[in-house]
Length: 470
Length: 81
Picture 1 (cartoon, chains in turn blue, yellow):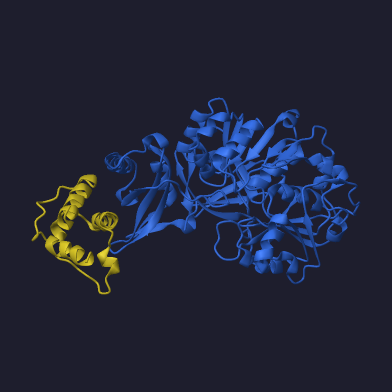
Picture 2: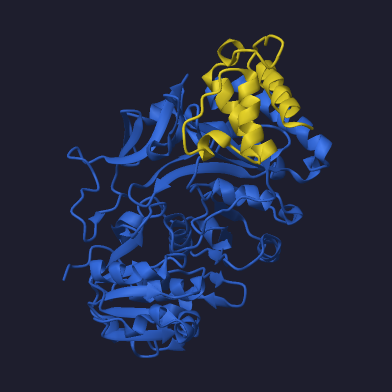
């Protein structure tokens, strides 16, 4: 068992003097109460040294369990709620799972669907069903160093398991400042994904309150809840933000700090947020489950300064090789679990697969290496076309995808969500399609202009907060 | 609108978008001389799929190679039956 190299999460939370709350739609819990209490009712010791699958339905209960399990379990596998249940046995086998934490949401589902019964899986010696009620007197256990395993997003098939340490996960979080106690953070993310977990750890280490999201909650209800808690900091993906901007309830909140991560922040969304929140600091961050948090950009412009590449900033090194961004940093994951594939190259850099282009003194994200569409031999990144369409004054968001073509193999087509005030009758739609195409022709080479545009009411945003690309 | 008129309207529209001047679009016009290149035709087939609801070239079991505009219109008329 590894020795301890950093204080456990519970110890850090216990040292806070300005305690915050975790809020979900139904409950609020002062998380510092866990310094002297437990949700495990005397059963935390059963997880000592074990490899624990954290498979709760709720985010609040998951956060409380993480605080307690860190420093006790040998390993925690954080299962996001959207992972297909059929993959869970393979994930458990890969991680050597021998214990599990679930909640009523999961055990209720197991009553009707035996496949989801985690407690009945082989090799699980102990399975505790928890609720977010804190009772006094936690078990006092010897401290161990805990591995945090997160699942990659965006892959098909069984997700990869990425091994992190708490030290690596929290390396981008600066020492707490006096202002943290008064801050109320919120995120559109689920805290069981990398972007959301960063927000949770930031709140827990700084003492800020955090308003959690809920997958089943409508956007307007979520925004109303953020207003009620008077949130000061709010983060999510550009897709989260575009969806929130379609709701009039967005005008009820007034965050001091607005953060985007997880997808390309194009100029259109940065400008729309600037217009919606004229007095807020607006930043976009680059992070991935494998590479960790790499950098923040706070000048309100898309892309990032070219000077970031080739320099060491806060211990993070970046370079561009074969057009993709590579990162080496103390914040990156340690390795993949159950997989001999190296996380980083022999030079220690993680290949992010994100293609960047240098224009002037700035790099811009062009798209994913795997997402390129080939049109008669010419290449298109869907994201670069979306960035242009999204700048059209009538457009809220767009998805560019491949359609098979008998002539050129592929063409690109676009699904477009209009802003509320741009929607209208059929005649207006035809004129608007022409105008968007004209706009694209002015900005893009011909093969990158969508062959066809469809207006849609909404685009599917995956549980990861990213635009669902098939 | 007839299939033929729909096709002609879309060709003229794509010609304008791509900055091409098209000759008069008559039935005996050879497609290779119509002013649209392969990308122009790819766009045309995609637009017609949205307006007419069919891509007869991808749907066909055998490869179809219309030579004139009249042939091209027939492929669509046949494909919509």
